[in-house]
Length: 253
Length: 347
Image 1 (cartoon, each protein chain N blue to C red):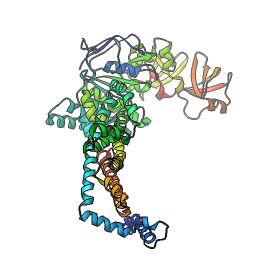
Image 2: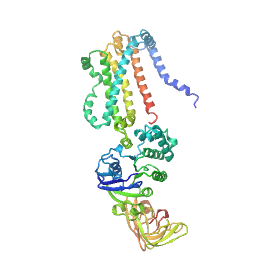
Image 3: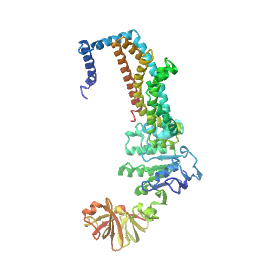
Image 4: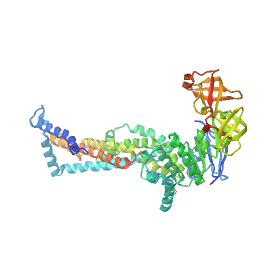
């Protein structure tokens, strides 16, 4: 047992401390040109506190969070369900694959103009955007996960009397989990990036909308607060899925 | 336990196979790689489409789905479910059958005691040794009390020692349970140790079905004999029983000492691979040591097939090329050859 083990976590914090320190010094002493657009770190922290206290940040954050949670969970569930069917049933895969291949390359934000016309500017619009953003990658990862399940395991299950449904729920889907989690992990961050972009362009509430308003008022401190919230949420969602993946598959992988 | 019968079964590999496996019998399906052994198991289990008919206790099962054929299948790669621990692997078939919790626990305990795997219950397949995986896979296959058990080269990935130990153990367990079993292998020695009868399959055709001894001493064609390595067979006309469990037999001009199993010795056989050949007189006792002259040599990649002529018989042997070259052997060389006691088969 190394007696300096307790020091290890501190080392990982050090670069962050240095980063914020350098930021503070550079901004405070106006070392770089264009310092007007570069507020010190402490100013950003103050603004973060101020926006939280007056409820502006909290309201906008929860608007974005609810959109992401609904859009991402429905998109992922639909992606896993359809991906499971496509991965397990070759005829379904053959039927749907051409359509999916055609739609998959379109970026989620590419749908924004047409969805604005179809659904109008309301709460449904960002949710559908996040749904599309999450659905296709999770679907592809699920299809790959199901297709790469060792066929002998399925044969064994069949000889042990398992029905197609048994095989799907007890063998194929659990073994596809690592692939599914890869999709979820990557798309959780992407969902946040997409919602911010959508809110910046077309939605009047949310972190993205707050960011755009701050930009028009040249409030760089608020812009940075929004970006920090975005980074924090992307990281938190990704870490959540890493944790869940480890909990569900860590024992046997 | 049921009788299984194949009537004119064919598919893209297997051709017109008819075979009857008796109640409680352990039949070994023997043949080279690509002969159609695994395909035949897949046909019986219903995993591969086929023509012809398969009967279980006289009733056709061709239209029964895989899940209702009552087959326990131990795959070549064992295919343990990696996401389930040993306990869940074993009880998988029992849960599918919707047995009660008490019945499941009883059966699980039975399997654990039979295969000595109680200590492995919480482990996952990645944490098991090769031998442990074999035991768990067998437990999973026999836990739901299948009517037919099929084992597809289950010991392939194991070292020689574990393999030998496990095949004895597996045979004892199968015989104890009395399950009608089909065991697939390409190794004649394994087949001989495991099987009540052997069925030799080659290029999708069933060449011979008989006891190991009959197949070894009376292969019914070139293909079977070639697969067995074209053994040297000596006809014996006289023998003298020694007092140490051995017998000295006069066979085609050679006096061969072999193990006596209490039966009359009519023939003695040995595979060309098992004969020790040397240009110099080997040290040690002179039991089963003979002299001869190489009259033919056929060189292959790493081995040389040689024909050694004695006064009364031609012997076929196969030796490593590097030994053949280092001993400076060739056609016309006088050599000593030994027929090792443990490699002789008598009938």
